[in-house]
Image (cartoon, rainbow over all chains, first blue to last red; front, side):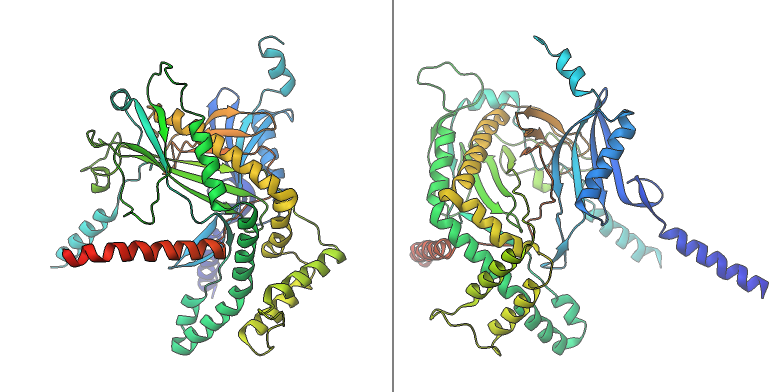
Length: 123
Length: 381
């Protein structure tokens, strides 16, 4: 009986482990995030930051973008230039489709706006 | 004995694995030098501003239940799609009155001509020295040598909160042959051995209109608009037991709930675009064409080779937060995208689009003329 229980609980752990989801995390991590982020450094203190959401509201997706931006920059004074806010249609079969997941992407600069303005020539 | 099928399967699977490369075909410094002055030939757009919508298709699900299932799902799909399809065409009709395809073509020509250097001015690299609209419906849609060909599309999003312009640009030479700049582990795929010397895509996303909030007045207007959509030519509502009648009942039920679907939002936002004689839509079209004309010339002279694993590059940033970027990764790498900065809602372009009745009739007429003109040639051959 004990062996049987161990096997069942082991199987359950494997099955549950296979579909582990977290609320927020990297897109290429071990668990599947509800709000996943991915960034690439383009130059010093500048990134392209992407949030992909499996659901939720548009406002939360924007909030998650800001959250990751704060984490990367270490302060809330970052500058952002969003250029992609889409729900691309996911196609399946010959002509079937369904609304896809929300994707929010943009340029992130950790240099505060005031510092950037002061650094520009002529200012 | 078991090895042979496994090897065959492995070879088949290997054959399927095509290494992805960007769709862009950049020019080289030598080809830019050789081309010099060039004519731009935008293809005449007949479709006008299209209205995208989401087409429900449950045929695959229905097919699992045999013939009866397939028949039931097709009837259900027809009822579900009737309203959105009708309204999308109605939106396209309304747009075509104020912004007909001819206006789009004239505007694009104007902006391309604006890129032509002044007569006698010294130029370096590739410069446009002539612009002429080409008609691709009456002539066989084959590439024309030694001209910059531009194919365009204009689409309103599902909820009509945004407008998108896409220009696909190609250049095929009579003397220069395309040599792929991309590297492959094995043999160069056949798709990279032929085709145009240059190709790229330019997309423009308009500013987003704010999504309306549902008020009792808005709900009343929504119901009235849906009822109008279904009126027959005599102005009478459809018979309740007809397919249109059933679709109307289903849509009215949906309209009276407390949620605004994208399709319902589009009813109001299409009219917002068309307010003041379509001023807002016309302005975005002008901006889209100005962007395309500028960056087509820019990119014809840009020799950078994109990579599917590259990074986005900010090419231009204007007041109001609008950015022009060169897409850095994927098969779209190297293409140019102009997007507004103040993005709030998430845009979708569905999986179907409708064009105006006038455009559909014109395309049908021209296509039949083209077929009729081609028919005697076939007999001779």
